[in-house]
Length: 309
Image (cartoon, rainbow, N blue to C red; front, side):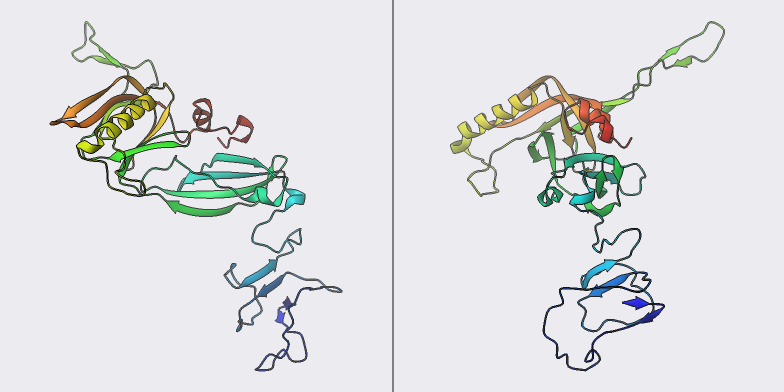
């Protein structure tokens, strides 16, 4: 505890080399004074100085800063002043947050959020923030960073994800910028005309979708003995990409789109009858960074009142 710029330790035996008090401390009282804060640590050899430490560490038990409240934890919310808890994300180095989860708080257990975030590109550093909210008023942000890396191509719809190995050339794209050039009667050069802000990608992908040979085995099911199993598996994937529902397409090189699969996917043999590849075309239908696009395309249930953008 720091008081008037000085450090104090209490108890008649507090400065003894060998501690003699073995009882747990379960009650602390401050009274008859003006206090800037209270800091408790489990460190056996704390550094005594006239200033508080710069931040929490693993030995910190509680730290009450008395900034308008008596909260002494490293999260500034509790059931009494929290109506909702929200989870936000943003690409590291950018300013704008995106709300991805909103959860009403009625019990301590509601502070726990388990959310699979499929909107992260491979190699992208993402910052997350858990924010307490009291009827629209946000509290302090508790942040953490994460980087996702993977080596497969994935198509995701809801909580269902299909993946396959991919090599260069297996997913080609075209940037669509509708425009035209107009040749004028008295001009050597044409005039460029663009009457829309449309700017989106289309592409075609190809991959071999194989089940695993055995349960708990990471080896793909090659060989004639797996032909029937593979055929059923590939048909299930064809049903998945043909259901008319938008999906997330993710590539290991960091590219990511919200896409709609367009007609007509094909299942073709690659050199051998039972060595088959599925090809499909797609069109970009939204931005993964737009809360509005995610909501109206069915990727998010976060309504407009919670959108950050």
